[in-house]
Length: 202
View 1 (cartoon, rainbow, N blue to C red):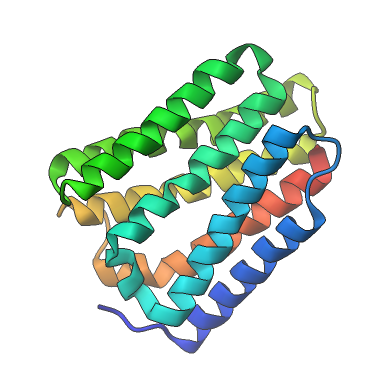
View 2 (view 1 turned 180 degrees about the horizontal axis):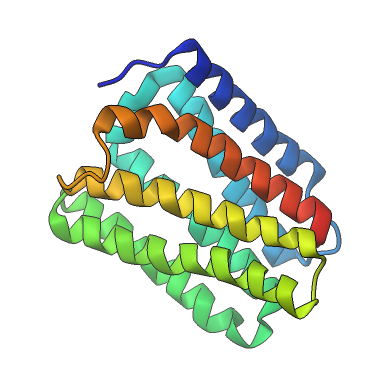
């Protein structure tokens, strides 16, 4: 597996710093549930950056890392739905809890194709929520136009998830080396879009 280069380490370090910054400054004017959800999402992003820095890309092979990483899109999407789609709060929270539970159970049962499909479905719904909802809110003028960057961040993290998913399925869109080469930059672009979006448009 590809080893971390100096550039990879710098990109991952800045990813961790931005995630820590977002946790520290928080998001103004939100209720306790979305604040907790956003903090969880950025906290896991911080943890992911640090784990990759310490253990290298081998950390991606860990079942625990795969399970915990599911909290990033789930937590961020729960925060967005809770804050902006009040009628969907309970159904989406139920989906998020059940989805995370299924990911844990299927992963404990072994890294089978069923576990990968479950992971893909849960990530897919959460990723589409993070991508689509901020863009829709920005287009309708419910939030500032800069909030669309949160959707861009959602698209970027979804792209990274898809690349890793197809790699695990044995049908990589790009070579493993190419995916691991672009992953640190993709993570930094993702967290940058999230931080800028929440700061500019909320």
